[in-house]
Length: 396
Image (cartoon, rainbow, N blue to C red):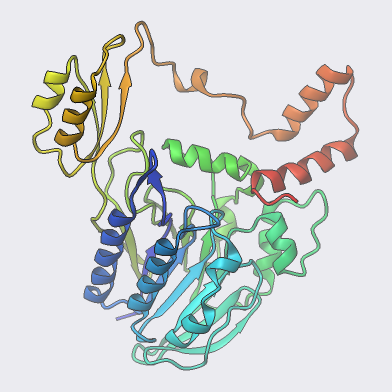
């Protein structure tokens, strides 16, 4: 039996649904995750970024984060490896490191930074570490694993955490290759990263929004850049996805009413073999179109444990008593809407706004309209450099 790795990501602790807390669902999911990891006798748990929803999570979200990592590690019985995502504050994520390091919890907050760890734990030992990597041995399995750790590598974070020279025209694949160059070559080298590997994966509203946050292609890594790894455990995409030797764990449950209904959980990897493990915890999200309050009340049976969005005909007015009756019938009523007469669903390509996949083209088009000529090349480069920082939410 080889090393068993369990891959999870994108917890987004503290995320709400129309300002309604979902931390109880997240707690149930993580409790079930811990139980599955124990049942499967896992050696390593990797958490591939976006642990929190915001840079300033609540105390309850931070407490759940640390409690879960501690339960997963079982005081060093198994390794727990965490990389920061674009929603995470790197410094906040690693703040409790004085408590995590003795438990065998390894946090990589900045790309290219050497992870802090002790040498020996109950279930594994550290053979070595360096800028952006750590080499673990599992004596009870007679095997080792070298992990290349790539937290969300925005250009501001790259400048802070590495000595990489980033010229104005540096592309993300070039930066990734520079990060990889300092990682030793090993047969059992794997990648743990928070990044996108190609277009066409963004089937949910949440993922389309997230890819705009990172400027589309500016932080896109072609799949061929992942060659040479035994496996790539990735975060950033909110849907489970697998192709070749790389996998996205996806989010623990649907975040919006537009998300597709797909199994949720994480991936178990062992000696090149992948198995998706379903993990429950999240509540179902249900849309109901009704013609009257009476119909809405009659359809409430069986939905007490689901988030519900009710859509009434346009012009219908709800009294205070009717609103109270609906809230009693649907304990998790997320919201109420009204259909717009004559509204039509636009094809996806017509309903989208301007594309950000070619930001330089958008800037040139704007400049031509404003000045009547093409912008200088150095001005385009300056725009792109600043635009990347703004899109990553890290501009000064």
